[in-house]
Image 1 (cartoon, one colour):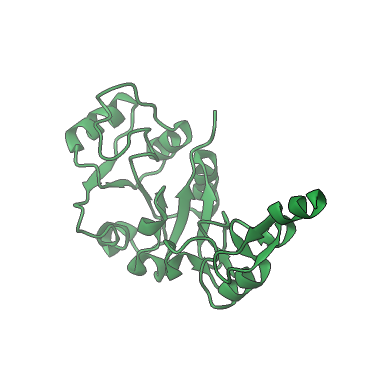
Image 2 (cartoon, rainbow, N blue to C red; image 1 turned 60 degrees about the horizontal axis):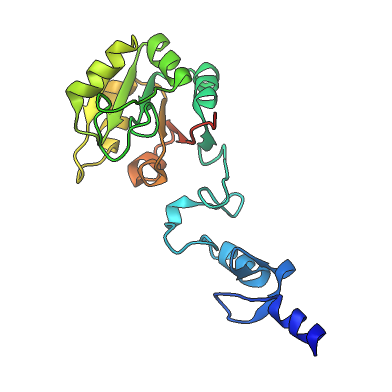
Length: 213
């Protein structure tokens, strides 16, 4: 039956329960029932790579896969303009900025002085106007980062964090926070979800998403 064959090919199998449904009932490989069950258990329904710390229990959303922002979790998604607006609104005592794929277009620890790399104009404004900005990066090219930022008029403290070290050692440092709140901006949700950072009620977080030009 040609009609029956057409209907069968339109069915999609849920990767969890293995039952087949029409496209209306399956989203990103999982059926509505299994998605609801996963959210009820506090886990991301879409990716097994997402840690429990990525999940917002206030709204039953994955902060990463659902593209969710939550004021109660003190985490929002945004670009440089959003960071700039947050600094004006929050008035943080300290601002902590990642470098690769955040401040600059460098990737995977590459030198910003090699190739043609851009700097985010809004983050540059924050670095030039806020009195206590720290670059917290896993990129080990400290001198090149300093030269790159200086070329753009930004004079900030640079912290190069080793692979096995934690960024919380800088972001949660009381001397740097100066008794106030801090704003931590990074393009990697794993860095933002580090336990010491996530549980510190004085640290506000922005998952940086570079604006499309």
